[in-house]
Length: 261
Length: 333
Image (cartoon, rainbow over all chains, first blue to last red; front, side, top):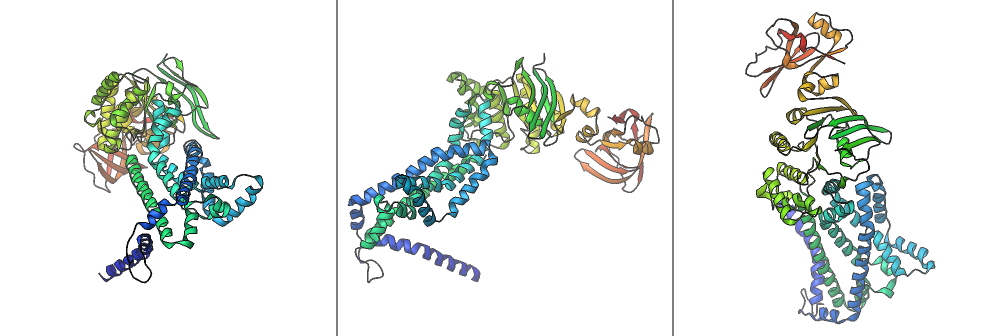
């Protein structure tokens, strides 16, 4: 009983430690004034309204969405077919992808940024495209895991064989059977990648800087001018990530259910 | 010419030979079983027949047409897999109808044929269920219906029952045989279960190390094993060296054979005219369903089987005189 009490206490402390900063930031986004009191003196939508009336924020938000979703779409078009072919027909080459996945994790952002600047700045390639390319490679682990797990869960090779024996071509088997079957897993991987890229700051800030202002760079700027506006940006970011997480959880659950043969 | 002819089939993966010189002739409407231990190459034959794997050499002719180079989708060969391979995003009805829809058969005919097929496999009431909502046995019935509805020239069954529990497996074995006879379709089953092979087949090809070790009717295979491998793999044969058996029965055996086999149920305790006698001390007696299996030790260990109802109980440690008819001592090549 005593042990249980301690466990509950530690759990409560952990929750407070994790949740308190988030709640405080969110509250600060609605606070009229919050300097000398324990709780805000009053609540207002003023900061959120100001934020949404700021064209700079809307543009920054749009750029973040464009950059993140662009990288995800390119990854889906380029990486996913490659993973399909390797997992289904050349599994012995999978170790190379796994090695690439590990390398993605092992490069710190700062090293990557310096490397990209040194290599690509002399070729005249727009640095935003370089960052886009780096993003595509950066989300390889999420796309790879999502795709591979989906394919393995459904025994994709056998589904393709079964479809072909029923009179369809490999391409038809892929589009009519495999893609609809693994789609929830793929989509979850894509959403996860989007949320990771949407919050990325180091690479875009170091390689491109304020020439291509994303939400994260906008947030950095606002931290120096208005804590309330910065909190409002964080609030919007948290809500967006919450929605994405919910969507990923729902899709993952559905994906598991569909493959529980 | 036979309905299906396989001639000189070879398959190599790198330096490993998986199939070596396979020759088979199968008649229309036959139920054939490829029986053998894991890794003996039986599933590879099915995959080559289906066009899912290329042969290194050899010929496959189905209904007079050479199938080498013909794509899977154009072979009119159906297949049922061990893991069912049902399309998880489709209902039972959609799974079964898939092949017909791809052939652009009109909707009314698709509906009618799906309904008929679901009746044959006793799944009409599950038409709108998804695969994950069905039991293993039901899923395998759907897979069977899906493969049969396109009226394939031959249906290949790759260990379709091995993932199911014993009771359902027995029921599905009977169903499989009855559907095959009802539709008159040629079926080739791959299994490592010799009882299953005996129960459903017209003919069995027993395979070992990528080669056909023996072929024939279930009775012929069971009663006349040609090699030690077959004797061990089919049933629980007692296999003896010539010298050991000669010592045990006190008679001379043909010198050209080095090994001999005796079925455990051919050994009995009552002496009949012309029997040879084997003496052994009872070591272990196990009841296996309706059969009592007793191990005795004479010159070497041997096992005898008696039906439970007629069986005599053995006192462990006591010596018994056992008898076997001379014609039941089978020389192995």
